[in-house]
Each structure stands twice: as C-alpha cells, then as structure tokens.
Length: 399
Image (cartoon, rainbow, N blue to C red; front, top):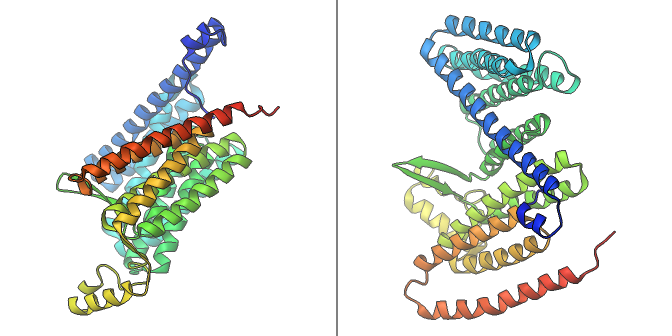
C-alpha cells in the first residue's frame, strides 16, 4: 500500500532518522519526475506521429518516412550509450506509429470494403509479435516493444469496430465486443505494466450497458441508461479486483486496485444519474428501449409499451436512489478509512460532496428542516466513526 507521510514530523518524532527521511523523499521525487518525463515523451510521440501522417498526407511518403525513423531509432538504441536512448525510443515509436496508423487510415479511406478484416488481422499479428518479444525478449527495448504492442492493439480493435459497423452488429454481439475490448486493453496494460492503460479498459467495460460520456456545445456529459445495472456491474468488478489484489503479487495487485477505483467512480456517476432521474431497471436492455419509437414504432406505440414495461419491472425513484446512495457512501467511507484504502476513501468523500451539493439544489433548496435533520444526524455519525476507529486501534497488531 502506498502511503502519504510527513517526513519532517516523523524525524521530529524519532520514527525516522534524517538520512532515512532523505531517502524516502528522494525516491518520491524520482517517481514523480519519471512520471512527468514519460508523460511528456508519450505526448510528444503521439503529437508528432499524428502530425506527420496528416502533414505528409501521402501513403508512400508516410511509409518511407516511418520506415526511416523506425530504423534510425533501432540503430540508436542498439549502438549508442544510455544518455541518448530517449531519442532512439522517440524515433522508433514515431516511425512505428506512422506505419501502423498510416496503414489504418489508408485502408479506411481507399479500401473501405476490406479495411475491417485487414486491420483486425494485421493488428493481431503486430500484437502477437510485440507480445512475444515482451515475454521472451528480443527485437529492441521493452519500452518500444510495449508501445508497438499498444499500437497493434489499437489497430486490431479499430478493425473490429469497422467490421461491427459494416455488419451492423448490435445486441449481445455488441456487448461481447466491448467485453473483449475491455479484457484486451486490461491484459495489455498488465503485460507492459502501465496502469494508465489498464485503467482505459473501464471505458469499453462500461459501454457494455451503453454507459459513456460525450461532448457537445461546450458541455461535457455523462450518461447511464441503466444506472442500477451499471452499479451492479461495477460493484462486481470492484469486488473481483479487490479479491485479485489480496491474492496476487504487488505487480498484478496494483492493476487490480486501479481498475477497482475506476469502477467505483463509474458506479458513483451512475448513482448520480439515478438520484436525479430514478431508474426503470432494464428498460434499454430488455424493455422497449429509450429510442425505439424513432425506428420501430410510432411514439404512441412506444409510450404504451413503456407504460406496460414499467408496471412489470423494478422502478426506483430518485428519492430512494438518493437515500441508498448516501448510505452506501457512508458505509464505504467508514470501511475504507479503517482499512487504510486512502484512494477509495478520497473517492467516497468526493462523491459525498457531489451528492450533497446536487441534492441541495435539486431537492432541499427550500426545505430548512432537511438541514436541521441532516446536521443533527451527522453528530452521532461522527461520534460512531470515532469510536469505531478507537476500537480498531485498540486491537492487537498481528505478528
């Protein structure tokens, strides 16, 4: 477990020596600097790759330039000292990105009838080659191998997306595609040991139930057509990843905890939707669907089908959702505080603030009695948490 510590106070308390505190501070600084450097490098590589493809705007020029950069990068990595390896990494990645990304764009633009199959199979081949090199060694540095693996995976999944659109795949097969994409992205993130990419797998996983985000008119939005089912889905992922993290080495456990936190965030965002609009459970999955009236029936037929469905399924009002969400946040916050899960506690506290702020204006803006009840209820709640913390602190420490 990563912990935040005040090294100055620990030295003053005699827990650490000044030398030990300096080591802790140096390692923390090294981690932060490495993260910043890698972020700048990856951002530069992505920007340069995309810029070169669209600036050259010619398949032959992109292929030739990409090949030259890839070869130059590999030569730098093989023949030069460590002090200039970053330039080799950058050149190799820009070259590989131009070849893979340029090929994908050229296929979609010039050969749309065959693009999906070629991208799917070609991307899988790149993933297989880079994955073998990652596991058994060879070719070049692990940094370049991992980046090329991700490029191949992007090409593979993009190809599957093109195929799904061409074949008008929907329903269960569409759900299977998003599940496959989530597993593939999480597996790639674990293999290259970069938790940022593991975290990205939450996007297709959430899209299994059409949960997602969007941008329009200077507004960022989050939607969840099935908040209850999404909460159950994300809750299962949280439980599974916490179980995973307890039983596996730290390298794998860290990826599990990352996914658990992202799933917790998506579950809370879905709860926010439910607290504002309620939920007719299953309406967009096995019910008439929110947009069915635009394609399959008249609006009157859709309205009648929707009323019939509401009478036969679980309907949770926004008021009930608000209460259940508040109770869940209280319980999770207390549990995460006592078990030292700082990130989970911070997330629960953040969403508690969002929930309170939202309900303040949506439900209780003109109800002063609600503030009286809430304020007095918070006092014994705080006392109970304090006593619970004392009980945990008094327990004998296991050897």
